[in-house]
Length: 273
Image (cartoon, rainbow, N blue to C red; front, side):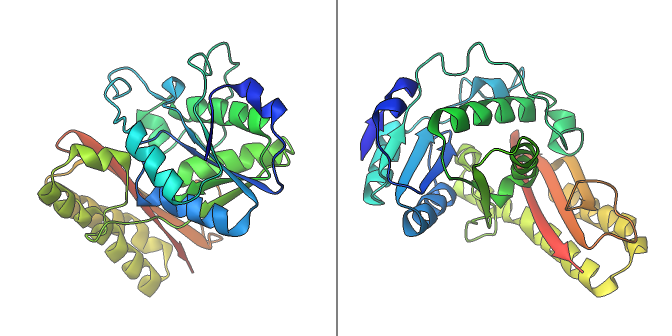
């Protein structure tokens, strides 16, 4: 695996096409590795980046304490025969024109108002520097991948955005680097987040009516509060554009964000009727 330490190096490398890009902030887990495996199986050259993007962290968030495990991350990528690891220069996120995203005024965008702007701005730079044929994301970050897909399509950027299913721990907890802030018993307890929205998805499939949406949200909120989760949101929206559901809605997004022991956790399920 070749390590690239500067954006300028991309002009000097002849990549084998098609090129797949997997952007990460490091502290790699099975969710990241699943993306790399998929890329290795389906594309010629695979580039993974590790960069903790300062633009997507708000005040009092965990930018300075975000887990850093570079040596271990490199070993994991080498074991998967990843072709390239991009470790951007320190000023990679400086002097960029911020990009205002669509679909960012709901869900995580309410409590983290600059988050998606920061994500989209840095992903735009990555795509311009690397020029990959495809860029891979996990569906745990449903709102994020929807925003990036919309931007790429609107700007007619040639890079295709591919989203893969959420990878979970045995308890059902969606894999995340922030899970490392929790003890094994706490992570097991947090499997109740997925159990909650999974039960709501079953109820929604059985009812197939809009009239149950508010009652399902109430049911879910009661369950989460009972299990000591501090709730940011629990919403049921149109999965295609994050708007309120209507009689025309065919794909429903059940999305949740909570805090447990001060650790923010998100998850979602898409229900198609």
